[in-house]
Image (cartoon, rainbow, N blue to C red; front, side, top):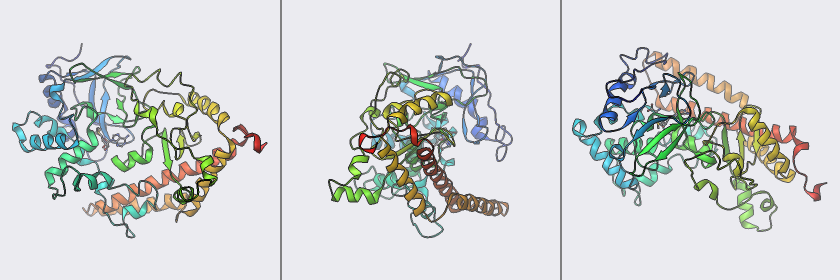
Length: 441
Ligand SMILES: C[S@@+](CC[C@H](N)C(=O)[O-])C[C@H]1O[C@@H](n2cnc3c(N)ncnc32)[C@H](O)[C@@H]1O
C-alpha cells in the first residue's frame, strides 16, 4: 500500500519557533513535490514517511506517519538518482555543474529542497582564536586542532581547488557534499535522515546496480524519527562528529582525547610508563563496515581497545564504559541496546579492565579538567548569559553568527567536561570492579 506516485505523503511541522506553518515553510511544504520527483525517476519511497522538525531538537529530519514493521524497505534510490561516487574532486565538479544549471538540472528539485546551508559548521567559524572567538572557547579541547581541516585541504594545493579562490557556488557544493554524502555519493532522500547512534532504526542494502535501499532495523512507531548513523562501530568519536557537523550527538557518546604532554614524553623516552597504559595500532575492525549490522559484534569476544587514545563511552549522565573495547563500540550505529543491556556489557568489560589503566584515565581526566580555565558550573552560567545576549540581539533584528558559534563551542566543551567528570566518578565508584594486576595485589 505504498509508493505510488499519486499518493504523495503529507508533511508535518512540529517546529514551534521559526516555522509555525508548514504552508509557509518551504523546507517542509515542498516535501510531497520532492517525493514525486524521486518516484518519477524510478525511486521508491514508502508512504509512511514524511519530513518534520524533530521534537526536542527542532532539527528537520525524516519521520514516520504510521507504524513501520522491522525489515521493511523504506526507500530505494537507484544509481541514476545518485550524484557522484567517483572521488571527492570529481563528485564536487559534477555537483557544481548541476547546481549551476538551475531548473535545467535533473537534480533541481533535490537542490531546491536541500537544507545544508541552514546548518553551521565549525569550518565556518572565524579562524582566529582571539578572546571572544568560538575557537578560543574550545579551550584547547579537540577538535580545536582540526576545525578547518576539511576546508584547508579542499582549498589547498593538493585539494580539489588546487589553491584557487573559493566561489559561493564552490562552497555550496563543498558543503552539501561534506555534510550529506555517503560511500555511493550524494543520495537524494536518503540524506534526509538525521543521526542517532542509540536510537538507530535503519540499515542499508546496496543493490547490484549501484543503487541503495534503506530498511527498518526494528519496528518503528508512528511519529518517530527515522535515524541513520554517521559513525558506525565507534569509528568516529563525538569530538569527530562535532568537528565535522557542528553538533554534539545524543547518548551514547564516544569521547576521545589525547594527552599531548604524555605523548611527547613517550616519544622521547621509549620505556616511559605511559607505554603500559596506552595501546597503539590501527582500529582495523572499524574499517570492516558491514551494512548488515547485527550479529557482527554480538559474538565477538574481543578485548582489543577501540582506540589507542583515552576514550569513554557515555550511555547516560551516570553510566559509562572506560576505555571501551571494539566489542563494546561495535554496537554503536548497528543496533539498539537498552540501558540494562549496556550496563551488563559494561560490567563485563570493567571486570577485565586493568586497575592501572583505570588509574591512568582517571588521573588524566582530572588533570585535564583542572587545567581548563572554567568549571562545569561556570560554563553552565556562561551559556545562560551568552544565550540571553543572543536572544536580545535577535529581538533587535541582529543575528550574530559569531555569538551563535561561541554558544556552540561552549556547549561542546561543557558536554566534554561532563564526560571527563563522569570518567572520574566511574573510576572511583567502581574501584572494586576492575581487574587487579598481580603486581598491584
Ligand atoms: C544528512 S543531513 C540530515 C537531514 C537534515 N537535517 C535535513 O533536514 O536535510 C545531515 C545534517 O543534519 C543535521 N543533523 C543530523 N543529525 C543531527 C543530530 N543528531 N543533531 C543535530 N543535527 C543533526 C546536521 O546539520 C547535519 O549536517
